[in-house]
Length: 199
Image (cartoon, rainbow, N blue to C red; front, side, top):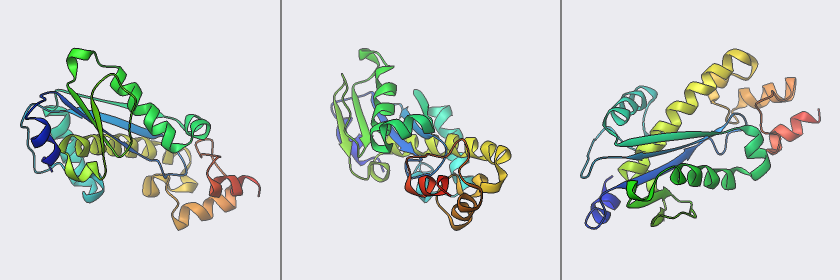
């Protein structure tokens, strides 16, 4: 999990990791997060958010915000995603977070898969959330924050069961889309939502 950090820490100390959550969801925002830990930080609780249960993520999230030198996140709402497409939205979100830091605050930036245009030295890592603790931590922060938001949206739009599916295209969600049409937080550029809006 600390493979990339162990290599980079031979030369760099302040390493910022970024990841996003919600790109494939039919509704709600994409959330991008970044995290930086103290040098040589290790925590066995921190793994790719997809490999953790909700309880494990919640525990890891509390550890992350307690131990991180810095962490931030940004919401990219459904209108933004519809305008730019999910891939470009994720990259823009990452670049906005990175650009919020001064030159002396970061030595190196690592992202999960997506290349970013930044004033800092950077590297995109395939499966970064599996091989980097900072990217994995960013994935946990983004996942916990986004899930909490979708739980709140489920109270406003209970017919879609957002508390269960977090906006992803489950059978129950797709059936609700076909029956009731899209909600105000659905991404109209996504085919299942676009098709449902024509019914």
